[in-house]
Amino acid sequence: MMAQKNWNKQKLKRLFKIKNGGTPKSNEPSYWEPGEVKWITPEDLSTGNSHIRNSIRKISFKGLENSSATLVKAGSIVLSTRAPIGNVKIVKTPYATNQGCKSLEQNEKTDIRFFYYYLSINEEYLNQLGRGTTFLELSNSALKNLELSVPILPMQKAISDYLDQRTSEIDALVSDKERLIELLEEKRQAMITETVTKGLDPNVKMKDSGIEWIGEIPEHWEVSPLFLELAEVKHKNINLKEQNVLSLSYGRIIRRNVEANFGLIPASFNTYNIVNQGDIVMRLTDLQNDKRSLRVGYVTEKGIITSAYTTLSLSNNCRERSKYYYYLLHSYDLQKIYYGLGDGVRQTMNYKDLKWLSLLKPPKSELAKIVSKLDELDSTTKELIEYIRIQISKLKEYRESLIYEAVTGKIDVRDYATETEEVH
Image 1 (tube, helix red, strand yellow):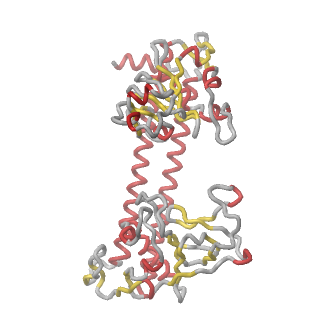
Image 2 (cartoon, rainbow, N blue to C red):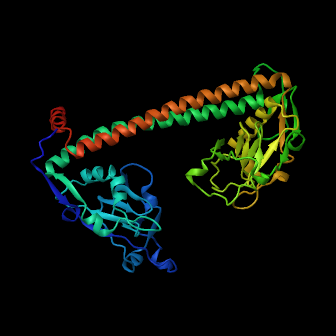
Image 3 (cartoon, helix red, strand yellow):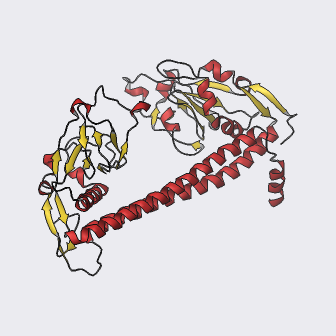
């Protein structure tokens, strides 16, 4: 631990000029165009690294002059103070903010990086200082009177240099692991599409499927319209016969924790559809409209699910064929085939739009092997990704603890500073 005789408790208002934000009138075009001033909102602070150079929206100098927004020096800290509280960045260019943010304007008596690191690990404490009924907000008074233990400027710089180096190393490791997850997902998706359309025998004779996005398929496979294979099922949960509430999340059917009161909860589950193991559930309205959301899920247990989704079922309830059709429809989903079938901004579809969608029909003798291979692929990939996510979580926890130890003086960074000077 570093000796803290040169550390002093100071309130934030003694260290920085704290600036508020504002919003120009939305019905005055000249306040927004030509948009010379970067105008940061909490949305701009939700992703990315410690520094930002741009904003999603911009205002004009006229808008700046005719609102409570103020211009802030480059290199200052911007902190979201509502919806949510605690996101923090250093802004590399001059900027203004809306009233959801406050700025700590840089000065020569502080190393801005030290205070960025300090605030970045105190999100929970900052939220405790928030007040409000509709949403929490961190007031000017609470922020100005926030008391920090602050070292002298040379030590601020030494701590910041140390954390810049160490956190960049950790961030690089996290980035590599996140990219590995992306590659595993890409490989999984490619193998699913290849297997459900080409089968397992690389030497089999092929024929043209007549389906533009599929191309050739094994010569002995058949093609059939969806309505001959999968029927729409509407089995309402009258009298609340079933209590197991399910949800479609990221292409998987999961149990929904109604007790947690997360998301929209209906007044009654009478209108929900009862689904059975082996059913296929599709969300035929893309509410996000981002062409990334997954529409198809496979039911693994009996339960109920919102009637906003469409439930498809095989008449003979053959598990292998049902699971195969799930993987096939999932592969169509990955290729965004459904976007060509829907109408409107939200790409709304119904069962009638799907009826004539072409499905492939491998012979029954091949189904079990195809499904078994894809189940194994799915399980292995899921386990690998979960393992990598745990590693990422541990790295992020270590990063936060490292910052805490450094900005509170619990680790001595002076040896690091000496080593750095010797290297250079």
